[in-house]
Every structure is written in C-alpha cells, then in structure tokens.
Length: 345
Ligand SMILES: Nc1ncnc2c1ncn2[C@@H]1O[C@H](COP(=O)(O)OP(=O)(O)OP(=O)(O)O)[C@@H](O)[C@H]1O
Ligand SMILES: [Mg+2]
Image (cartoon, rainbow, N blue to C red; front, side, top):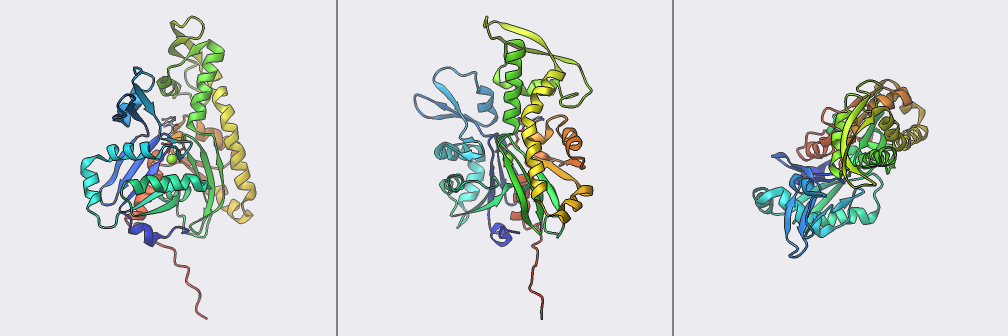
C-alpha cells in the first residue's frame, strides 16, 4: 500500500468529505454520519440553523434571512470554517465527547486523486479544527477499492471507477498502488445540470433544484437503458410566463441529454487503459471494472460502459459508502499489509 496501514490503524476516525455527501466512520462504532454536505445559516446572526438532510430540504425554499451553503465543492473544502461547524453538528455531542477523550486524536481522510496541495491542506485544516492532532490522507481510489472488497494488494490488475458528484475518477490498481489513473471533472452534478438544461431548452420548463432526482427516479425504469416508459410527467415553472406547468417529457431525449457529459467519462476510461501496461489490461478483460460512488446508481450507466468498453462492469454492493467503508476497514486493521520483504540471499 502506498498509505501506511500502520499509521491508519492508529487513527480514531475517518472522514470522506464529498461534494454531495459527508461520511464519517468512527473506529469501533462504524459509519456514524452519512448526510448531505449542506448547512443552513442565519444571515443576521450567523448561527447555524440546520445541517445535512434538513438543510438540503431547505435549498431553494428559504426566506431572505436564511442562506443554504455547501462548504465542499468540486471535491474540495472551499469554506474551512463552515465545514468544521457542519461536521461538529453532524457528529453530534455524544460522538464528539467520545473523540475528545482520546489523548492524541488522529484522523484519516480520503482525498481525490491528484488533488492539488491547497485542497489537501484545506482537508487537513478542517480536521485539525475538529481536534485532530494528526491527519493521514488516503487516495479515494484506494479507499474505495478496499471498501468494495477488491484484492488491491495482489500482483494483478483491478480497475475501479469512483463516480462522485463533482468528478469521476478511474484507476487501474496493482500491488496496493495506483498504476494509472484519471480524474474527469464530470459527475452526478453535471448529469443533473444536463437534465435541467434539456428541460429548459426543449420544454421551456424551469425545474426546481430538488426535482432532478425524482425525474431520474421517474426515468429509473429506463434511465439510460433502452426500455422502460416512453415518457414521464414533470412539474415545473414555465420559463416565459413564470406559471406552474406540467409537461410530459420524452425519456429518449433525456437519455441523449445525459449521455453528452458521460462521453467525457468514456474518454477518461480509454486514456487509463491506453496508459496501462498490456499485462494488466489482459487481466482486466475478464475481471472487468467495479463502479462505486453515488452516481454509479445512475440507471443504465453500467450498461452504457459495458457497451462502450466491451468489458464486464459491476456495481459495488453499496456503491455510495465504499470509500468511507474502505477507510473504516483500514482503521480497524481488517486490511492485511502486503509484505514486500527483500529476498534472503
Ligand atoms: N440513485 C441514484 N441515481 C442517480 N444518481 C444518484 C443516485 N444516488 C446518488 N446519486 C448521485 O450521486 C452523487 C453523490 O455521490 P457521492 O455520494 O459518491 O458523491 P460525493 O462523494 O459527495 O462526491 P465527490 O466524491 O465527487 O466529492 C450525486 O450527484 C447524486 O446525484
Ligand atoms: Mg466521494
């Protein structure tokens, strides 16, 4: 492993700060937080009104004096102070007190592949503000691969694709390290934006920010897949008159709109495979790749990748929490270190 398993085993908690969701794994307690990375603030007093699910429900529905903020954007903590306040509330008094009792609190966090130094610094500072004396960083790709049970430490290729909200990361791993990897700045958010734009252009309908998911759910029988209902009913606001309106949306057209951002992901996969040594690519032909991350659940996404690459594509059992669970497994010492001892002469 490129990360020190020994150091990770000494950590007390692990954090996955995602653009869409924040997840916290506490050693011995498991995954204690899995909530949207959202906070609602009172503009007048600066007080925090809500965090997580409740704050997300408030998005777009607030009076002037309440502001809904996302302290993590594009996979980076953009507002360190707000991220700390949000995390404190998400953790709750009981967990915080338990963590405060540790003499030298150590935290682990996953960072996007090839994150720039400022982004990693922001993650570290966020956790230091929560009381951590030491922060160990793990590449999300490795954490996710461990979390979905891939045999990362063996001398054989495994391919993982982390489909997050802000970005999609693809990598080929072998011997516990990344052989080749790409980070494509297209994720679930780009897909949502494509749907919103399509409805605006094709139906002059403004979709409330919260309705993209229900639309995907409405399409879920078909999604990107070819079969399923031919149309779905969507409520929104007319762009011209501003009045509420309901339209029947052709699912085939939505499918095309979604596919546009996803072609960038296909390019990224192609690049990773081209950069990868042939022996490893041969391993992948029958093993295929594993999709993790919330956007892996996008209906029909796996089917589309299967067709485009000709490789087997699997979705992890609980794709959204794989990275946090992987960090957890390393904290609990459930991952066997690879012993690369020099051979005795
Ligand atoms: N059932 C679903 N169908 C389609 N998309 C989904 C589904 N569930 C979650 N998503 C999408 O997955 C994304 C969230 O995934 P995830 O929780 O992995 O993101 P994140 O870790 O917060 O983001 P990042 O890793 O990019 O910082 C959101 O964009 C959401 O729209
Ligand atoms: Mg993530």
